[in-house]
Image (cartoon, rainbow over all chains, first blue to last red; front, side):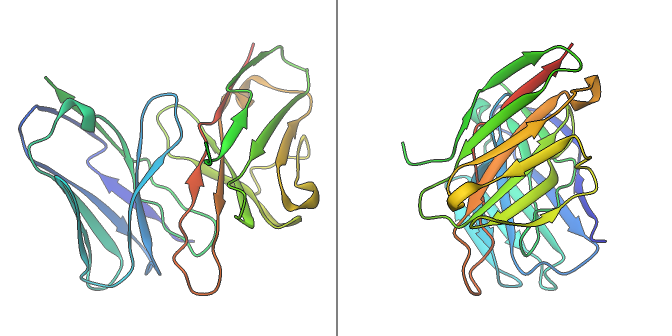
Amino acid sequence: TQLLEQSPQFLSIQEGENLTVYCNSSSVFSSLQWYRQEPGEGPVLLVTVVTGGEVKKLKRLTFQFGDARKDSSLHITAAQPGDTGLYLCPGGTYKYIFGTGTRLKVLA
Amino acid sequence: DTGVSQNPRHKITKRGQNVTFRCDPISEHNRLYWYRQTLGQGPEFLTYFQNEAQLEKSRLLSDRFSAERPKGSFSTLEIQRTEQGDSAMYLCASSPRTGGAPNEQYFGPGTRLTVT
């Protein structure tokens, strides 16, 4: 059974700070997705990474896929209150396996 | 709006009652998934369909739960004899996955169920 861990579980920072959150799996991912979920809403897809070592940027968000495709990181530069939410990094060839996510709160 | 839609958004019911939720996927997507998310946790897989065929059900899905996807379009999830432990957000997602494409799923806004 594939296990997926995200860290940290909770993060509270001031507006303008940088942060990195991590996603680690016990097995290799064929692809990995990052989502952000706001309270009371469904997860919204941010990015998909496929190739080991791949780096993708989405404005102030930088996503990196580990060389072995078992881990990934999300770095946010100059965080803003609008970045607040639950960040999820599920993997799976059809059904998703989720960790508990990283709950980020950015204070103005 | 061409995204995934779910109805109702909120449902409050008394223990023992039956409830049914509906999911309308993105129109060209042939795969549809149901997940359940409790407070403070990530979503957990319940079941998925490829077209009208239900291909897998999680052990989390007790006999009180049933899902259908007639004609491979919308899907319904029914919970019979609801229990307080069924209180959760029920999420539906759809995917256009074909061949070797990455498994990108698009989620609806969810149905929040509260069993009193």
